[in-house]
Image (cartoon, rainbow, N blue to C red; front, side):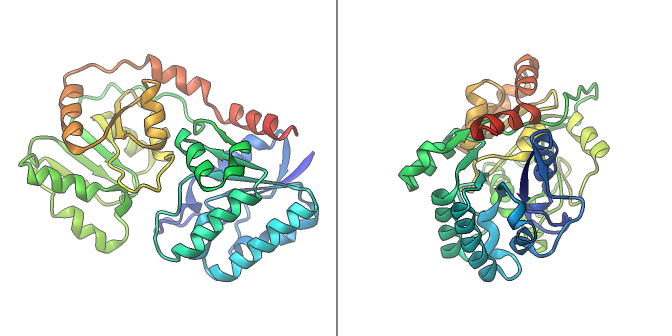
Length: 338
């Protein structure tokens, strides 16, 4: 059995926007275990890239996630130097380098030059690039012509089965997940205020607001119809809030976004999902799984139309059954011929 290392492998940090806390890595590890021996993610490390060197001579492949954020890590400049050595070492030994390109670039704009260099390096050195948005294929190809032959699109896999809710609607709209600037919640609320629509919709905003100073941008819009819960909601509470809402809304504005784990997690609910017409949102809209908008005017028209319609769950169920973590792992095996 081949030996693989899945990066990153740190502890999840609740009060950080560090995406290492995403369950994606854990699901990927579980899915790939039938084909590969995986480093033990139950033993998180604080050493980042350096931790890989413990296994270096035993590895057949490395799977990188969110590597474009490396310059922001502790000792980021040194870790970037280690990454250059690591990639070249893997190429010399003819080992596989896999990169899951979750975004066009880091959501955070500090250390931007080094992040762009890291991104470019991964485009050139990776043996297989995986993207969860068709837009990622054209984007990678526009930056490096050689990427076209090694990049593959597959929908972000899904773990959970559909959740049916019989709860009565308490909210027209729910915006859930970590509330951070690139998700554009403040800009959507500002638009509602400018259009005198702040009291038109019953809105629930459920999730930790980060960074703390961003909270002032959000809470100023709270009123009797706009409820803001600045906290992490455990699964049972989240199921309840979404069950009480007719529309799940994503207001992402950052052009770095390709795919979204929160989007995929939202598909298990028998509720309408609306997001911007970019990346994976656009892909799912083309398959009639969700709805998308191009500007706020169109968004308001869409919300008004969906609020008076009943949701049809059939397309959603077919999509969930066709895009599991097991099928994703099988595609990786096929692409790498392992």
